[in-house]
Length: 65
Image (cartoon, rainbow, N blue to C red; front, side, top):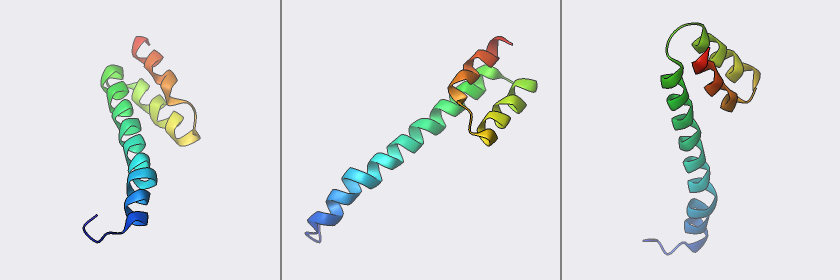
């Protein structure tokens, strides 16, 4: 804004910032799930799900295991 560059401001606010917020949200969800899961085999399973690109949202069920 200080340089009066409207295109750069629009890019940062529209594309770049949105991507950063989404990435931070995803990491915070992973941290929350890992805290619920605790230690042990479930953490290994969580890692495998990340490596394989599986839906980590299902990892919440691991806490009950």
